[in-house]
Length: 432
Image (cartoon, rainbow, N blue to C red):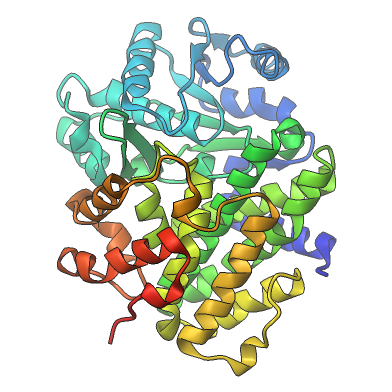
């Protein structure tokens, strides 16, 4: 087993290096949010998850009390947050409320979907009069380009995370979903990084088991996909961050499920998923995340990534042997990998790691294949292949350790989806 105390100290050191004083995190730090917001503005609009829900009432009251004690006034009533996957209709609604309240700082209180919607809403509130088509915000650097063209700036956003998951409070990504088509698209822009953030890991002790496991496996996916895809100096920066994140999550997820109130386990999980947020600011996610964007109507995001990643690991394996040995050691130490990874190479090594990942997924009640998921159809395959050819999602292809172009999607990604549907690794075609 790992040295949890040592690993948590190392993770905290990485996060301090990443965010310096702009990020407050740990156990029991929620009361510091008022001072954090006051350093940014004095009239706050609050976008909050769980409006009218008993579980959220203590967090809402604690947030308002902390703001009051720091001399921060509310610009208006709390604005209800977003539904899962941040539907664009919620982005428009929140943006309209922000324009009406005229704050000088925005506070987003919630999980990844609420924070992503707030990022999109802050951008749309600043630019929507000149750029009403939100489709033009997706892709890399589009928000910053519009701000520069219009000589405008965004309201500062202070992100208060409530779920160990996406790392949305730390990153330049905002996932927004068109619910009519079931397709998620992505803003990738330094302009939407929250300038300040807070995450009290103690608040996650009340997170339901399904949300805990979904968030945990999303964090693993961030670390794994970045680690697989990077090379050169960026890889050396990301390597310890990614491996420490995977280690903390894989070793803490079952403890969080067995004893949801265990603060040491919750701290380890929160640090691990935060390292996933750090990882995706060094590099980017790739195959599993790309496919997950087309499965939003049938699977939570973390679960979709957990289903898909083993099959992408087999596809990438011949190009990433050394990396997979490091990942294999973590899963072996956690009891999920039985094979001797040192004796395996290429595709065989990839299959061994993929099987270990699936063993963890099954251990927390996740499906191992798309075929097990109620509602999965050929339409999801067609949607995923079409999305992979969308120029606004091209970064996901480029981030792969075996980079694909739109012209190669049908030849190589379609077999990955076929394998994920049935669990048959032999269907995966390796390049070259």
